[in-house]
Image (cartoon, rainbow, N blue to C red):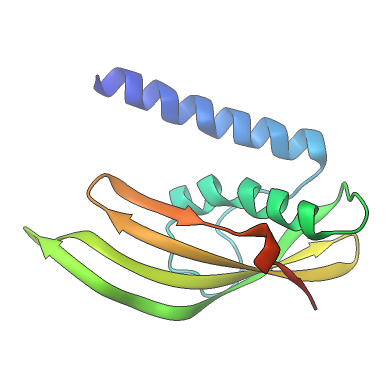
Length: 128
């Protein structure tokens, strides 16, 4: 099972990098700013942020990069089990430069027993 999970993670990393390159998006981590997401989570989240910004834009853009990140709500409702976080949430805003226009994408990160997931609502992405 561990080999399958490792292979899946490698495949996801490869696909994210390939998609980023194909679209011309900057997917290098660590990201600028004050995100508390680790590098693995940043890499997992970045393409979804770009897709959300793309749906908020009036025209298509082939050049995007995350220019800043900031925590807007520190971790809350955090629960521990054997010194490991098993529940909780925090919120951040990642700012994207998309063809010269800046967009703020709010993200809610959710800590669970199997790791951290995230929610991004394209309707909440705003142009600056």
